[in-house]
Amino acid sequence: MTSLTAVDKNRVIEMAWEDRTSFDAIKLQFGLNEQQVIELMRKEMTVSSFKMWRKRVHGRVTKHLKLQETKLVRFKSSLQRQITLNKISKRK
Image: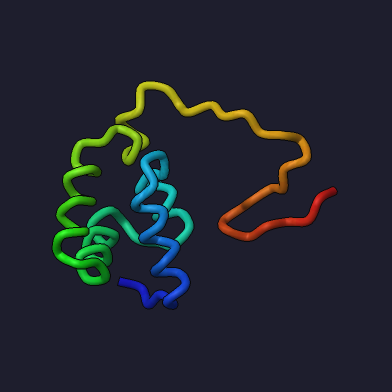
C-alpha cells in the first residue's frame, strides 16, 4: 500500500463512507484499489465501525461503477469551482 499522510487517510475514509463515491474514484485520486481501501478501513477504524461499514458497502451498486446501470447525472452550477483530482482550480 502506498504511504498516505494522515490527511489523505482521513479523506479516503470519508470517501469510503460516502454512498455515492465509488472505489474507482478513490483509486483515481489516491491509487488504492478496493482491497487496499478495505485494509485501510480495517486498520484505522474500530472493529464495530468496520463491521458496520462492510455491511453497508457489501454489494452496494454505487460503490462499483461497473455495476451501475446508468451514470449518475447531477446538476452543477456554472459558478461552482472545477475540482480535478482533489485540486481546486481558480474560476476562469
